[in-house]
Each structure stands twice: as structure tokens, then as C-alpha cells.
Length: 167
Image (cartoon, rainbow, N blue to C red; front, top):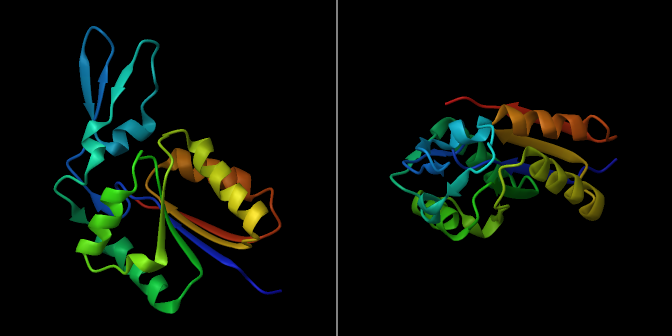
């Protein structure tokens, strides 16, 4: 069997730490959440979210352990390499990667504009079904995203590995 590789990296708190926050206003108070806190936040009725910080990559701090893996995969030509983010826009991510000397000509950035873990799992499933990927590697800091991907991938007949990172 010939393997068609798909390599997927989350962005915030996986490849980089930033000073970007999600602001949640519920009429009575406003919360300021890091991407990690937002990933596990249980939305309440009446919550209004402000994602304006994510229109750019604010004060990035590279997570070198993970970007090292990304660089190695790029150098090996490991197939389709994607950054899959809950952010609504991809351009600031491409700009940041370019600034840290990562060859963005070999990377696709997909901005889902959603923090629903099922949306990431569905995106991966679609890549498998429509583009024939059968060797998946996925890394993310959100345990909810990891579990959704594992649940979906466990029902497939392909080679896969998911990695939960904590930084």
C-alpha cells in the first residue's frame, strides 16, 4: 500500500504562544481568555465573543519543540502539511511562519473560524474521503480537539497518530 501523508498542526499554543486573547462579554462581566482557556470554555447563553486579537499574531513566542518537528517534515517532503486553526484568518499565520524562516510555499493554512472540536475532526475526515490521505499525523494542544480526531480516526482503516502537546 502506498501512503499519502497528511500532517496537521494546530497554531495557537501548539506552534506559538501569543498575547492574543478571546474576550467574553455576558452582559454582567467580561472575561479575558487565553487560547488554551478558550478551548475548554463552556459557552453560556448570552455570551458575546470578541476575537479581534486574532487578526494578527501578537508578541509571538515560538514553541521550538513543535516547530522543529514541522521543519523536519518540510525538509523531508512529508506530503500535505497544514496548519489547521480555529482563527478566522490565515494571513497573519503565513506572515509569522515566514518571519521565522519556515518555507510557506509548502504549507497550507486553513482558518476554520470555529472552536468546535468536531469541525477540526470533520475537516480531517473530508481530507481522507475526498483527497485519499491514508497516513495522518495531527498535533494540537486542545484535548477536546485531540479526542474528537481520535474518535473519528478510530473508525477508519488508515494509519494515524495524534499528539497532544502541553506548553
